[in-house]
Amino acid sequence: MFAPLVPIYISSIYPTSIPGPLPRRMARCTPDMKSALLSLADEVLPLAGRLVLSDLFRSYEEQNQAHKDFVSGKKDAYSPPPGRSFHESGRAFDLDLKALGSLGATGDRLTVFHKLAARHGVTPITAPDIKQKEAWHFELRGSHQTVYDYYAAGKGTNMKPASAAAASAIVSAGLRVDFLGDTPVPGYVQSGLIRLGQDIGNLDGQIGPGTRKALRNLGISAQEPEDMAQAVEALLMVNFPKEYFVAQVDGEES
Image (cartoon, rainbow, N blue to C red):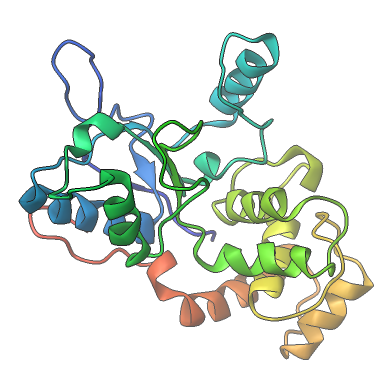
């Protein structure tokens, strides 16, 4: 149960003296993110660029430390508290902008990369300006963009759209989100229902009347959260197969 996180071998800034692959603790992502990253790495090479990462997956503890560093002023760039970052679901990466090279562009190389990334559903959170904070940060929200849109439309009111989408992605990987309860299962059920087009009210980790009505709308009669999750997941796999199944990539095992 839950959407998988898979290993990826990709260039990184670590160790700083002789750059090597991204450390194993960071080198995990969703299947669709893996496909996007490896494709982008191939696409920038003919343009005299390299895709080099400084960050990808973060554990709960790592996200918590990053947030503390931001609050204390040790870290300049904003890092949200645990449960609110796409890094925690393997759906965000930070890029070494210098390694991109010129990308064959007479103008801004970042603009070129934005266009390449968009082909794979990868989006920035800033305009293509290397002077902006977080210009290096990119996300592949996948079906969790639906959760963002759901909250942006006012159908959920207990958090901001970006936080809701990030929390949705994290529980969908079976990982901890404190404000959604002790187990990710109810949150996964609710996240899945929203992504399948159902209105449940707030994503809050509670199997309440709205969640049960949405399950009935989909013909799911399960009573236990684990059974609900398995039934919802079966529908998610059909609707969003790239988020559950690893595409075969040359030179790697799926």
